[in-house]
Length: 253
Image (cartoon, rainbow, N blue to C red; front, top):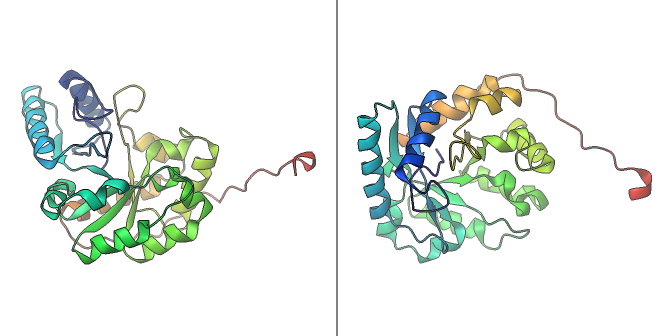
């Protein structure tokens, strides 16, 4: 549901060879459908037509190389760009061509207006998948904001690496807590290349003790999003006990 597989368009691969290496890694790990979600931000002002063209070129090469993977179009839309994108263009940026939008909150300690922006999008017929909320400092400070968004119908997509400490211990603990509390609906690779940030998901889920939820997080929910169907309920499974934060030494209090 979240990858930067398209070449030369953002901070993903520089060339189509890099895109093919990432795609091979995804296929080898069991992925069969990969959403290309390049940044749509002030730094990367991409558009739906360019994304669709590159997805078509990449799929042609995947077929020629006999790589068993289908790439579908999408975008990772920065919250700060949402107000500037006209409705026709926003419709072209939906995941798989549908009405779900992958929205990236900023990495700032405070979020101003995110809830009203997302509610407005929902009123206009869009549905929202929130990218890597576990890495958003504002949600660490105000988890109730994230909880209220989920209650309003927003879904969340964690980055697999967050579950195993790739972005630090605090992010890992926060991510695992969100999963345990039912605030996570998808885990994606957010792959940028085949080495530093590869298209790996299953290994991270297993390491985090979340394999019992793997099918729901990586197959059932994504399939429902792409089909614009009802999101299936989370299965009742046993998960590892919650980690307690380490106690601070008395001289550091």
